[in-house]
Structure formats: C-alpha cells, structure tokens
Length: 153
Image 1 (tube, helix red, strand yellow):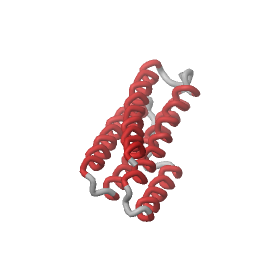
Image 2 (tube, one colour; image 1 turned 90 degrees about the horizontal axis):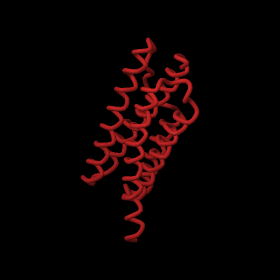
Image 3 (cartoon, one colour; image 1 turned 180 degrees about the horizontal axis):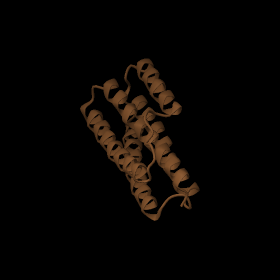
C-alpha cells in the first residue's frame, strides 16, 4: 500500500461526492416535481455518507481531506443550470443532466478501483467497492426514470 497515493485516490472520490452533493442541490432547486426532489435528497444522502467514510479513511492515514469540488463538477453544475433554464425545467433534460453526472461518478469509482489496487488497503478496496455499487444503483435509477420517459413519448 502506498499511503500518499491512497490519500490522493480517496481525496479524488471525496471531490466526486462533493460534486454529487452540490449537483443534486442544484437539481432539486430546478424541479418542482416531488418525486425528483425525493430522489435527489436520497442521492445527496448517499454522497454525504460516502464522503464521511472517505474522510475518516484519509484522517486515519494522517492525511488532509480535500474540500470543495472538481473543476468538472463546477462545469456540470453550470451546464445543468443552463440546460434547465433553456428547456423550461423539462423533466427529461433534468434526468439527462443527472445521468451525465452519475456517469462521471461511476467512472471515477471504477477508475479508482481498477488503477489503484496496489495503492489502497484491502479494507479501503472493500469500502470503495460498496460505495461504487451504491452509486451505480443511483445511476441506474436515474437512467431507468429517463428511459421510461423516452418510452412514453
């Protein structure tokens, strides 16, 4: 295990979860639909829990947990704001934007797991696998909601 590399990997996932939290706060403000608001709240809670676990791991290794979001996360939030404004808060457009954000999150976890197997501990690997599965389930929920809209059209 490479402690510095493990801290970097965990911090990158803290950023992804920060992006999700802020992205879903934005999405929640962009819709009046209660089912979407409830789903976004659930997804924010998923990321709050993941973030807490990641921060705990970084702290255990005497690292400094990163704060803030990634530049791409800021871009995602801006893009989502613009998209929602241009489409008149269209449900499919909001779900498309959310799925894009979920693709980024799922990809970040997959990359962390694939590329850093020797840099993180077995316990961290297990934790990341669990978090990856939860975030993938969130992704699939958004995708299924969006796909149901396409079928109905």
